[in-house]
Length: 168
Image 1 (tube, one colour):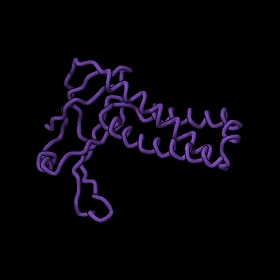
Image 2 (cartoon, rainbow, N blue to C red):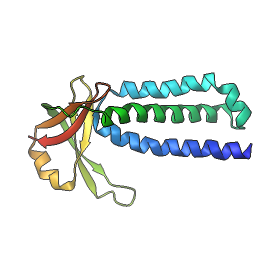
Image 3 (cartoon, one colour):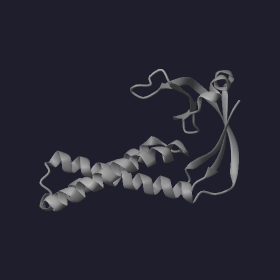
Image 4 (cartoon, rainbow, N blue to C red):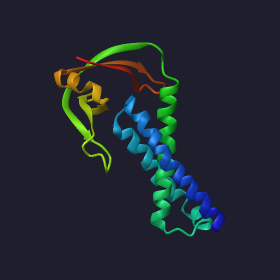
């Protein structure tokens, strides 16, 4: 039982780290958040389908097993979808402009709150918003801009990939 617990904890930790990779994929992809929520809901469904099997190999309570399934299945499905979409994207690009809805600054970490990262929020084609962060060098250029120009290419699953960014 202890060996199984170490394996399950390692899988959970690996999936939590995979979520950091998913965040980078998400930043480069124009995708509705509902698709990603769906992947994590599949993880919840997986919990109900594998409840008995998990009971045999783990002494965790039901809540922990559900969280395990949601995170592991959701993170892996998201990485698979976004990763393949990004890696097998078309090389053909198109340029589109979007209006900037809001300009903001993201505070730094716990001990660097004064170090702020400039960011913009723009409206996408499907009436959703997307946030892009920039280095501090772009602060003045962001203040002057009202539009953002994106060079986009179509990914494997039809979700557009951001190849380059220009502020206008």
